[in-house]
Image (cartoon, rainbow, N blue to C red; front, side, top):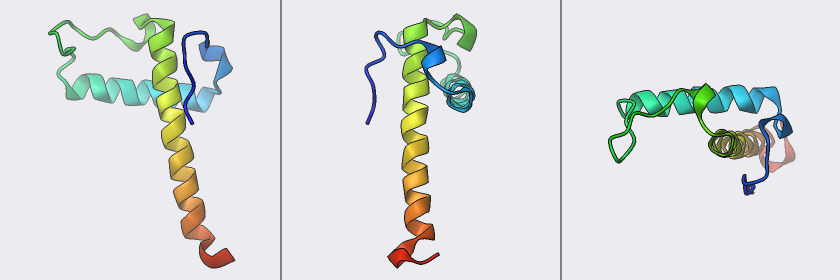
Length: 81
């Protein structure tokens, strides 16, 4: 379901997933007091390495797919709307 992001660029993803990934990262960064496990400050979204931004985008994409699948199951339960 997820992709190895070693050779992926942000342009490989659509704008929606890029925006949602940024929201998710910033929420995470704020939730942990802007500090990594080792105590270092977590960087702004724009200064994250491309590979890390793509990993956040891929994670967000996976969550979106999961939500869409769940909604589809709820909406079309037993083949009915």
